Image (cartoon, rainbow, N blue to C red; front, side):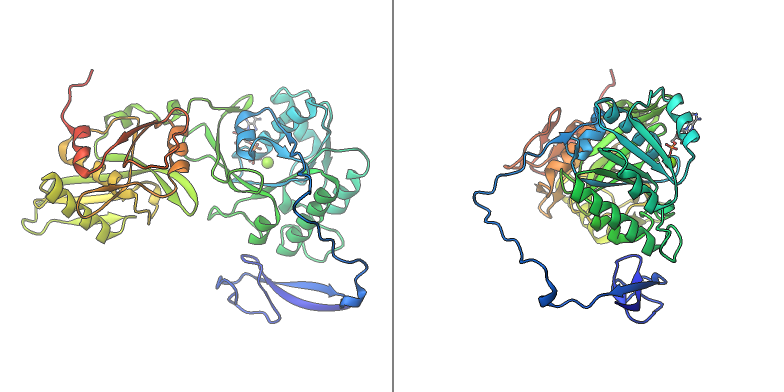
Amino acid sequence: MKTKLLYRCGECGATSLKWAGRCPGCGAWNTLTEEVVQSEKRSASHRSKAPEITPLKGLSALEESRITTGISELDRVLGGGFVKGEVVLLGGEPGVGKSTLLLQAAEKLASQGHKVLYASGEESSSQIKMRADRLELPGENIFLLSTNSAEEILESLDSQEYAVLIVDSIQTVAYEGLDTGAGSVVQIRAVASGLIEKAKTTGLIVVLVGHITKGGELAGPKVLEHLVDAVLYFEGDRFHQGRILRAIKNRFGASFEVGLFEITGHGLMPVENPFSLWESEERSQETGVAILPAIEGARPLLVEIQALVTPSPFMGNPRRIFLGVDRNRGSMLIAVMEKRLGVKFFQDDIFVKVSGGLSLQDPAIDLAMAAALLSSKTGVRAKNNAVFLGEVSLSGEVRPPYLLTPRLKEAVKFGFPLIVTAPSPDLILPEGARIDRIKTLTGLRSYFHKRTEP
Ligand SMILES: Nc1ncnc2c1ncn2[C@@H]1O[C@H](COP(=O)(O)OP(=O)(O)O)[C@@H](O)[C@H]1O
Ligand SMILES: [Mg+2]
């Protein structure tokens, strides 16, 4: 057995034999940490058994049996419940409700006879008991272990036939045998690997809680996200009591699913009608805004495009300011609107902004931006429950966006069932959605006629 030193990047997992200020793999600064590796030189002759190759044909597919939690929004995000041997990482900011959600899920699983081991490195067993009492969970078949030791967790798993293990959180658990402290890249990798191996060999379902850094990233190595089967984010800042559970990655389900919850004194309650959470008095009076189900990476995200069109004090040289939208794209759209819709902007200052400080590359932003501009210019607000979606060509034609289905799902989910977009042949309408098809920019006009409010 040989011992050597390695430096591993906490972001991308790249390794280097020498320490460097900047990761040679991903270019991040100050992310390399020392790691001791014990390597056993292996050669082909040391292999104990030949590789096992199975013909695909004739292999019987394993009936994927789901273990549902009965918490509808959680099951949906998981792709229909947990799968045996699955390892799920649940990330979120402190206080968002990770421990609450998992204790509620544990109760549901336990009440079906699945034994749950809840290992906490953050709270004592009596603190968890207090939460269970507050949530009025009886706690039968739930076993608590307050520890920071990975060895203890693995040992405890042998004492009973547990179906589910919850580790709250991965950053507070460490192998006593390893030199570095809990939360270090080395520890997180080691603890996760140990538990993943256990899950894969025994069918145990493992849920790891992960902390979020200030930047909104899961703390710890990026590689952790690659190791686990599913990565869920629990977010809470979009509306007051509302919580959003998002699948960022899921080997056993769709990765763009979202679940909605409301946090109450009795814990997290699934939200059936999200429109009530979004809709506000002020919103319904606003002009110059349009909702767009944008795509960021592969992930749908509902954003608000805001526009302000106001008479310019600078005759002949009005201001054009775009935040989060490409300036050329915006200027081009304004020219197309002038030409095709006959709206004159040359005496107006124009400001366009994407809510939440986001910067969008999505070409489907055009129609929403046009709607926001037209709304501000005419002083007429768009229909409350509509989203606008599509790229606009120089001829004023509206083109259907890519990844339409996840966008529609996101819009409907958040209470915007009316989708204004271009006709698309391969469109599958999600339940509850309604489509207004417009072929050209002129079709937008009908939404911004002055109308008498009922
Ligand atoms: N004793 C309590 N009474 C009422 N609400 C509480 C109590 N303790 C925690 N909460 C609420 O539950 C929320 C979620 O807490 P928790 O599940 O511990 O979050 P996390 O595990 O994500 O840090 C907290 O933000 C708080 O609003
Ligand atoms: Mg917690």
